[in-house]
Structure formats: C-alpha cells, structure tokens
Picture 1 (cartoon, rainbow, N blue to C red):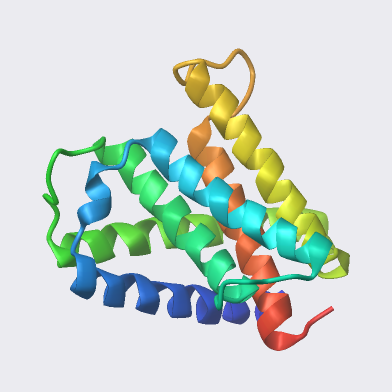
Picture 2 (tube, rainbow, N blue to C red):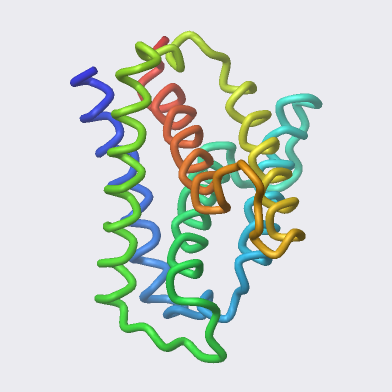
Length: 181
C-alpha cells in the first residue's frame, strides 16, 4: 500500500504541474463553468477514452494518458466550483487556485487510501477499461443528481462522484505509467 501512496503522489504531482502551467497560459477562465459544464467536459474525455479502447482508432494526436489527466484536473475544478460556485469572471489568483487544487487532491488521496485499505488494492487486478466504464457510470450518476438540483434521497452527492472519478483516473495512470498489475 505504501507503493500506492507514492505512485498516487507522483501521478497527481504530474497532473498538478499541468494544471499550474495551464493557469499561466489561461488564468482561471474555467471559473465561468457551472458544475454541469465541468461534468460534460469530463464526459467528453471519458467517451474519447472508451472510443479508443473499443475501436483502437485515434485520429487526434492526444493520448489516453492526457485524457485521464484531464479527467483528474476537471474533477478537481468541479470540486472547486461546487465550493465556490461559478463566477462571471476569472476571480481567483493562481496561488489560491493551486491551494484549492492541493486541498482537493489531498482529500482524494485520503479517500483513496481509506478505500484501498478496505478493498485490499483490488484495483490493481482490474482492467483499465473498467476504470473508464466506472468513470462513465459516475458521470451518468452525476448528471442525474445535477438534473435533480443536487437533491438525493439516499445517494452521495456530486462531490463523491468527482472524487471517485479522480481516483479511478489515478489508478489508470498508475497502471499506464508504472505498468503495475
């Protein structure tokens, strides 16, 4: 499990580096996105991964790894948007955006470590395509919750689904990066 802890940090560190570099290029333009739009961005990335997994054909020169990174970064953006709400402007400094990123990455890691303990690292025996399917299922759940104005009877909220999308994407990236079983 110690290996998973370190691999999580490496993968999320790489994602954070990309997030930070994009902040320099674009600022926090994503602040205008409502949570539903963030969910749709994640949906587009997961559908592209699944399409490639099924057909083996990729016409845009962006690999699967970059799509999982995008899912992680958009899910963290989604968590930030759930906390702060959408804005009409890019109203966050880069420093605060990075602080919030780290906060939600840390919360994701804590959840992953707790679940990983309880499930005995079962994710290592799963196929990467299963992570894709699980992410798509979480997206559909999230859309349903959003369509219900975030009012659920018994289910966890949108935030729980974003955390799971992050962690399934981290698992995929660990397997793709470290070729671990």
